[in-house]
Amino acid sequence: MPELKQQNLIQAVPENLMDRPVLVHVFFMLHFPPFFSPGNMVEWCLPQDIDLEGVEFKSMASGSHKIQSDFIYFRKGLCFGLACFANMPVESELERGARMKSVGILSPSYTLLYRYMHFLENQVRHQLEMPGHYSHLEAFYDDKKGVLPAGNLASQQPIHWLPSIHRYMYPEMKITHPAGCMSQFIKFFGEQILTLWKFALLRKRILIFSPPPVGVVCYRVYCCCCLANVSLPGVGGTVPESKPFFYVNVADIEMLETEVSYVACTTEKIFEEKRDLYDVYVDNQNVKTHHEHLQPLLKINSADKEKYRRLNDQRQMLMYSQEVDGDCSSCEEDLFILFFMEQNNRIFQTLMEVSASQDKTLTADHARGMGLDPQGDRSFLMDLLEVYGIDVMLVIDNPCCT
Image 1: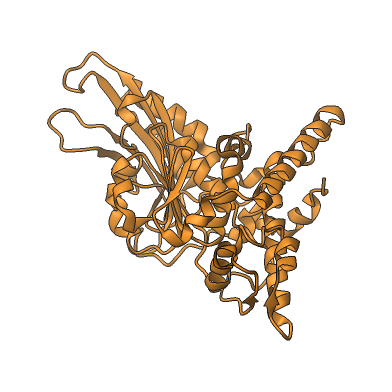
Image 2: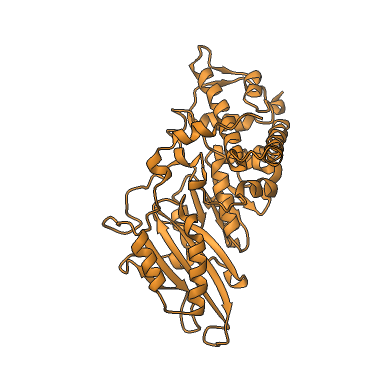
């Protein structure tokens, strides 16, 4: 198994970013309404004059009334949010027999929001049992608040979500639970992660559907974005970022219509009918696309199977070394991210070398050297060259045309 270059990666992350606290721009609480109210309502927030339109739906996913608790990552304008939801039965006809609330925060970056999940979980329970007591929330905001620029959250300058930092995901910067969402992601999708990898690398619009709870599905969004990391300089400068939008609902339709690349999840089945909003639709473990030219990418080929075997072999070796040698210097999160980053680097390194050569000819041997199937990945390679604007000539025969 290739040694994980942990020391080098840590050095690549500036120290001021490794230790930087999250800046909480907005702190809010909302509740499911009684009979006489039209919809979810923001009950309390700091600062009080901030525009939180739409947050009442992002922070309480559609269908949440059927579950007891959940957590939700989402995007509001150019900020990211984390909310914890809880549902408690009450003997009140006015509250429809159940009291439901969410407590959440908004920040310029999502990477450190996980640090406050435990606090949010405790506070939403506290608010269910003692409604209207906001002193703990006010103290938290006073301690963590950031200074908001003039204007509302939707009109700020774009917030760079630091993909060069995120790709290393050391413990200080993870959004995961200690159990690790990467291993769950691999177990859930199996070989299909290679299909998702190709779509993510091609910067397609990927929408993941699942009924509540949605927290674990938000982690799948994050993992899917990690599949597309490339550390080579000069690669991807002209393509859109692989951005996690996390949870979206019907209130986000207008925004999604303008996006050319994203990864998001939803609990609303109606999105499946709105094909103009996505390129790839993932219904639990079923990955599908309505674009005919992307259909070949759904088929798992021999090279995909080999990559998946190598990934599992490396995971097994890592777990063995941790169990036998007590070596905890590397973790499964690092292995997963580095595995795909090295795969992506190998592909783009080869493509750039061929592009710089005199004849610019990409052959079947090149494809095999990149870990791709010359025939099975032909359409993937063609799309990759077009999306990234790489000037090479593909000379691999298409078996359908011979």
